[in-house]
Length: 112
Length: 116
Image (cartoon, rainbow over all chains, first blue to last red; front, top):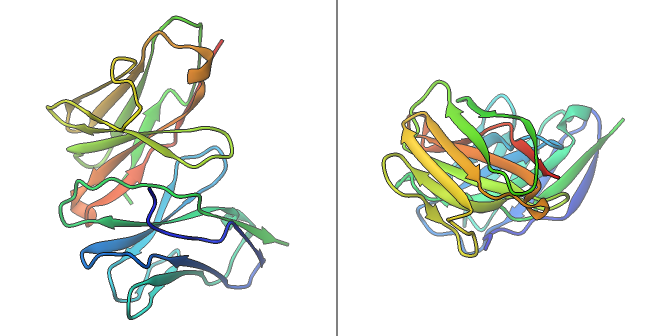
């Protein structure tokens, strides 16, 4: 079973920041938070991951609370092409063999 | 990010026949690959974990004799749907573990299987 909880859907205006929350209250100390997105009829795309520090890359920023029980994915300037289902997943990365278990994700719709 | 390629992207086969889907890691070696299936408007469901040079590990409820997985090299895993039936029609997606990029998992583009 997925170990995360996300809102079913969210809307965002084009050009504005999209903030996608995720709860992972049972996360273990060695589990990372991963974010993927899936645009219709395509394979999931890796976005970002982190352990406890905030992370930023060319796609997004990941803010993890100090207690690590929740996190927020931030798309700073959403575009219409960011419309997708966003999945937040916790996973042990150290062993390298832990599988990714997908929940239902958040369907983000970016509106013109 | 690392590139994972699947082939074919779409396939139609007759009921009772078998169909093979290939998953390749193009710019990295993947000792571990994963196979998922996804029905319309549903999330991805993990079918099996494929380890190079050993038998695949199947998730509960997935028939290993129906969904044959072979991971013969560090860059190729194949999924063969045997004796396909219309209910096997689905979107099949593979992913590969890239140890060189922080043990991140990257996904292929997916393969649409339609059994008629």
